[in-house]
Length: 322
Image (cartoon, rainbow, N blue to C red):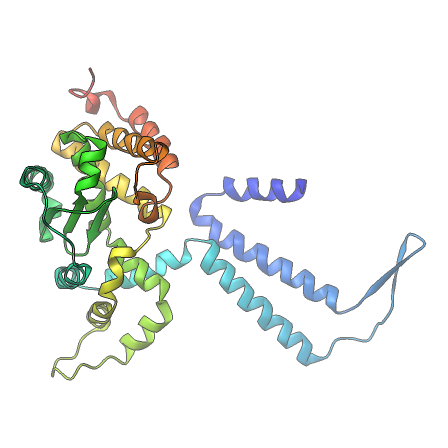
């Protein structure tokens, strides 16, 4: 167990870009050793090992063992490293951003939200959302819509193209101020800008998307390129977007984007940390929240946000210090 602990600590010490190669090498080595041990069996006698059989393995066995090791190494590389995220990100980058709006519109229409909410909450969300977009020109390539939906739990949702919804229960139960509401919206903006929904869907169905896109034909007399084909294929998955659970890497990236959006807007980025603390307090008091079901790793992200504030140059903290 000591060796395992040391190996894990060594793995965690590697830079992120080296971890995929590390895992691939580890798994390949383990299977090579396993296969090598299978070539001959041993018996323990009088403190020494003796070979029971020296007959070499058949070529067929060697070939099967090689393929087993190769497949196992591939799955380890895919599921235990960011490799799948890189591939999904590459594919999504090929999809025209203009197609995001139609995808989001279709997904929202299938979600069937209840928009019978307080007009005061709705105005507040719309005004803050517009303020964030106006202060960040790079966001203006999306068609933003900020709204409030009626639910009996605290959560927020981001859909492709710029559709962002906050539940009225979140606003009321957490008694959020304008800064904290801006933090929620900026975090969801991060999911839209980084196209996390599309990446998650493609990551889960990668082989299917690649094969279908390669032979895609919709009989519209227009030959779509690979990215356009994937974008149209995503329309068939629109109904699943509201229940997607983002990865921890997605959450950290959305926090990073949201933090920058808040700073550019002149809003204290510490409101993001304060909102998460309120959320954890609500969960601890048996408040009904589904935040963690779609946004994992909240506690760890709070610590990361504290570090980000400590590392922020004093010049950028000016105006936020009280």
